[in-house]
Image (cartoon, rainbow, N blue to C red; front, top):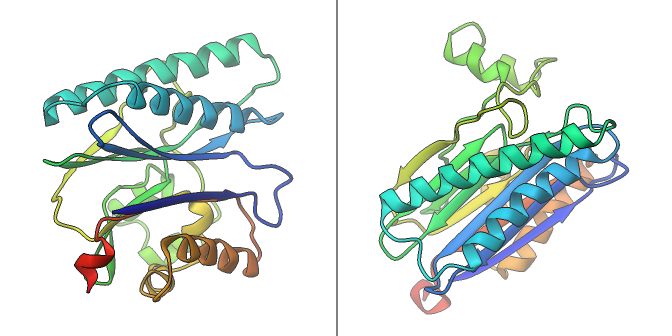
Length: 248
């Protein structure tokens, strides 16, 4: 089992408002996190860093997350704490208008796999050479597609495709969607929309199928995004759950 994560500012943005990490706790359980911040005067990177750093420190300090129910409660409790921290920061910094962040995470133990998300950063499972999206975007266009008012194709180029309906720091309370996923997968991929906005799922699959190291695959995905304009920050966390011996 190997993992690698990377974040890149892209070719257009002056700074990077994404945060990403992969951490282990005392039992070797793993937590993958990607957050895409928003807000003026670099407030976005503050919000995303608050979320990822908070979760990372809390998770790495515990011996085990416990049962699936324990894990869900732990995730929800920490989301509430992070939301309060972001709201408090915005309250004390007048130039932090619109401060907030998306968050997508995956929690892997020997017994289960859980995904969680707020906003439009994406979580996928990788199995038999195919990516399957687990998370559901909290965007205006996603709601319109679900309601039958927009097609998937129309949504791709809609002028309001980036309007979020939910984010950490956007209100006094926020709920994270939780997804219980079969653990029998080949890998886990989390990313900000800087990746999915420039590469199709099929293009990402093609890179992941290449006979190269996990580091090379993630770096190639970033390079391909930048070659297509790099219009947004790009963050990727990838966990390959099949060891080299298992692949042979």
